[in-house]
Image 1 (cartoon, one colour):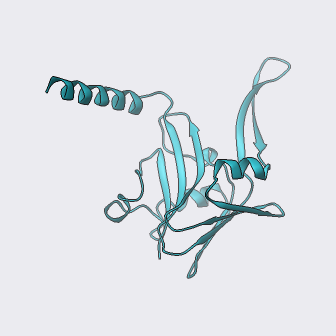
Image 2 (cartoon, one colour):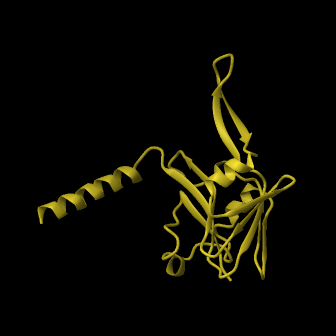
Image 3 (cartoon, one colour):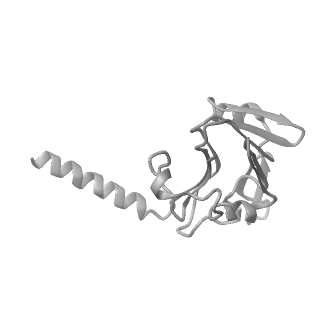
Length: 170
């Protein structure tokens, strides 16, 4: 009886430390909850880095990650191709693709958190287009693509201000 209580207490303490951390994880993902394959077309991801320049000041720089083999290595079960400057991701039913994964700040997800600057999602019956980062963020609350707790909870971990989902259904 005492062991079980200590395990629960340890788990609760770990959960509280994780939630109250100064650098929470920020995540944005597209999840295919339809019964058909969907296709995502986007640009190559950009990574934000902060480096010290020759004068000693820290500068923010964006690096385009256009190494397709490195991207494919991160997502072994997802079909990823390129055409010109476009990255084409094909998601099978119940697969997900991360648009952002980074640490930082206690506030909600902002456009600079996203690794992609545009997004097009093609399904059998619909096309969803976001021309910039702000439009991608608008998809969180779009009735077509927003997370619905009652139906999506058994397939998707969570949806909070620092963890957002773009859900594709049919």
